[in-house]
Picture 1 (cartoon, one colour):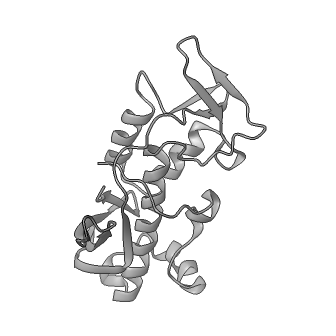
Picture 2 (cartoon, helix red, strand yellow):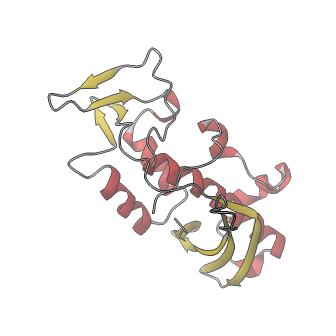
Picture 3 (cartoon, helix red, strand yellow):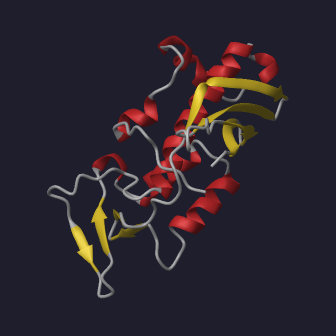
Length: 202
């Protein structure tokens, strides 16, 4: 089930934010190809936190209505004969290559393919490139309820040379006075020399 977020952060900031300190972030690039045995427990948590935080925002981008959070002011639009309107995206993500690059930096190839097949390679795509310019159909998406992943609750279940398994709390608003939090799992794998998200709790 797709999820809407309670709090939205400006798109550019969402992709660069991490709970780790600046010094730790500088070290992530060099450690992104290392095995967990070469990293401390804290470094593994920083790596996992950074990837899950970005995965949460990239998933929102692809599956929610107006995932790129377009303002529609002074924005070029195209309306087709069937009534579908698409909007030109911002300079922060102006081409299909840039859009797919955001996903491939965070998710594994299999996950990306499934996401692209649903949102791009379809008869009613959410994203479409025309003459080198990326457009978004902001009416596609917006399914599911409210929830958010609490990265500060993250625990490492297991780690090997090729895989890291974690669990964390998925926080949902109370329903009829009952706490709707649930414990979910995610998996990171080492693919083509870098750590990416293989499974993600959506």
